Length: 455
Image (cartoon, one colour):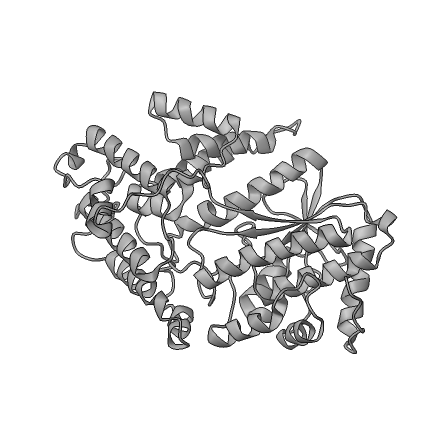
């Protein structure tokens, strides 16, 4: 790695000194959240240069740079994540640094399309953001837990900054411990959180990125160009204390929490016309949520909600109807074909058909559902072209998860709920006194009922 002339700005030295002191101060490995945006790129670059300054014998702790790909990321961000993680891994190996780059994905059972098209989950809103836990928090948490099980305590290093927004500043102040570099993670045991660039401004970040060349050969000026088209990024979400990306410019292109996807609009206006079908599909999904007749009145648990204090039935509050789910799938495949971008994979299509088959045989309201199958819808859009094989890129179930899935299928139990209950049990497993276990399990059951019922 080439050495670079030091920048004149004092913040670079201050942050670098703090990183080195923190790194040498204990034996806990680091997990760096890398979203591909400006803040996380600057953070990873600062860490890279700081560790490179150390004597090789002092580089004793592992550093894991992890990116979260929800599989519905903005295409330009997803592509950048792939490229940058490969470059980071290659450069770290060449420079002899204990840094490895990883991308985590949601499990097949948790993907956006499996839940919306397969189970009929309605388009997310700020009050019912069922996607955040499944697509973002769980994959990252599971990676952290694996490292904890292998190496003990970990430090999660994040590129959060107070000046990014008033909400973020308030959130960071609420959880920080004055006088302490680290704070305990709110949900993950044996995990601490470290935010070394918390006090930097946006100008500081861009000044650094444009003056200090990427140590792994990344394209910082290309990142600036991307921000000029659509500024903002979706932070790596590690728990509910992390500010949501609902108002962010970069994030899932399917996000219906915001009224308009200004980022996608800007990208299309800047010349990325092939993204137009994705924007059209997102707008359709947003409007569909409250469209008359788009959702069942009965929730997935068989209950029909009534307005508080009256006997009046609340309509259109359950999952999407089967006819609507099939229309969504048709539109997803059409957008995929028109845009020339892979939006849904073979594993998802297979599981969606399994869910439809199960509901058709077990749920009376499904018996009158249209006869179209996933294969028929695919053939209608692709005119006989073969469906993609089950490439298993989503299926990252370990042996225990697969066993649990098999048991749930055999006894008709909800895998999501049983998996969550197992996670809670493991969370308390190392504690001698487990007073909070029953309450957490009851809350998980209530949350699942809310998730799986449509509101």
